[in-house]
Image (tube, rainbow, N blue to C red; front, side, top):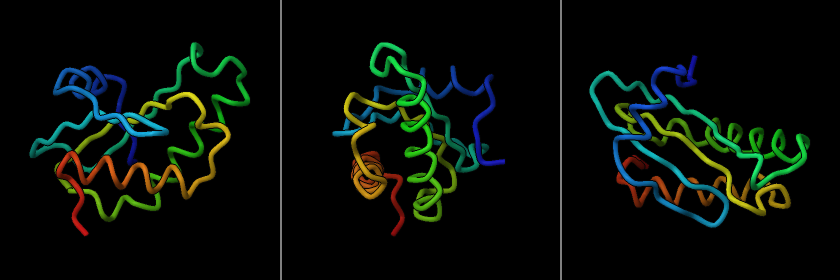
Length: 109
């Protein structure tokens, strides 16, 4: 519903350079057919245990769910977890996502 299809990941990754925050990095692609969708990436290199990878994914999805209405309608984004995210709470990830979206120019509030 609000998730990127596998075929759209390549287009978003190729669109521009990532923006890095304390807990996550984002890639943004703004087009007329975008539709405010998000994708989540967590690497085994940064999170060895599956429990930590799944927690990082849940945190990013929840942060996106809480802030979805504030993101521009013509933006697709991919969020990638950075080391140390597993020890953070959801409010830390939400504030980091907001800061990165403001820097990318897709924050509407």
